[in-house]
Image (cartoon, rainbow, N blue to C red; front, side, top):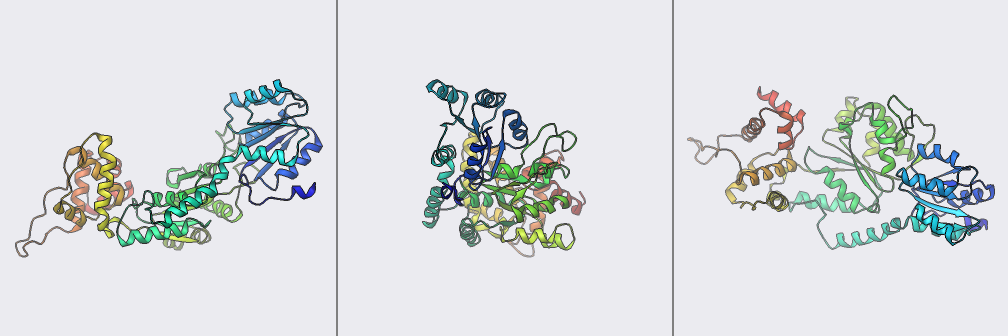
Length: 452
């Protein structure tokens, strides 16, 4: 019997958490030995009264629940769990069952029903059925690899330039590995698109993709958002909450604007990356997590390390594989494809016909630097479709000394365009930044340099 209970290292539910609720020591021992090597977390309770506090601290993926318990019965508690919105799987167990009991169990919301005594194979098959979606991961991965090897374009990544061909090839090579990835690039270059492509082509494609904007979370809350917290961990923590690392288990966590993460959270993130375990704020218990981390930044992390604003050890831990996405101004050959893509995407939603892109307009667009990159281009196409023409501003005047040569520099074209958008937004820099596809900080910096 013991030989049957040896660990299985490649079970599809290895990153899931399980709670066993049973008051029989022999059954508890059997289930602990069977499940602990195969699941990420296995917690034990002898009654509903013992199980409820554990469930408030952790949202279990599966509860293996006996019907006959001291105090409240398992079926009564299952009814309550479903009424309160618990969406995890529940497998009910009993030694005294008839057809009516089985029907009551399934009506109460049980995913499966086990009659004691049951074998190891029976309980593992029940869990297999509960987590059958995980069994599709490897098949999906193989299919995606076959598609990529046939040269099919990566979803969301658009371009025909040499730079983008190189990016696509590197994404295909990186995706199947478990390596942590650091994506560099200016705002709007498509770092999240690249991160989603890595996830979709990976073995984790059936798991969740969880994006996190580190700059959008208050410094005092970021640890709770990432790692979760227990009830009473801080003022206002009226109930326990699972963190984003927990929700990303079995999938990918995308940490955008990683350079904005405060130092205390950087230290905890480093520990999680090294040990693959998280500790919710206010808790003494560590939880194993199976998550791939992809980080992104539009800042020079080496310079941030030198200025002691970013931990050097965390930088090297994130930089297992590093990929830099080129700005739009360095790949003008991709403009026609991108413009056609955005028009095909936006025009039907606006119920307007697409615009015709002539060579003169394309040349002027290629001469512009696009400080907001692809995000700014998309907003420009949307605005042009609404207006009914490509709003590029007045034609640059030819120089009298050098016929055909524009007097305006690219910086002047950029300045005129940004000021025109600002004027259209009545000076609202936040709205202008959204339309241009740049951050408020970038817009403030440019306006300050121009004395505006």
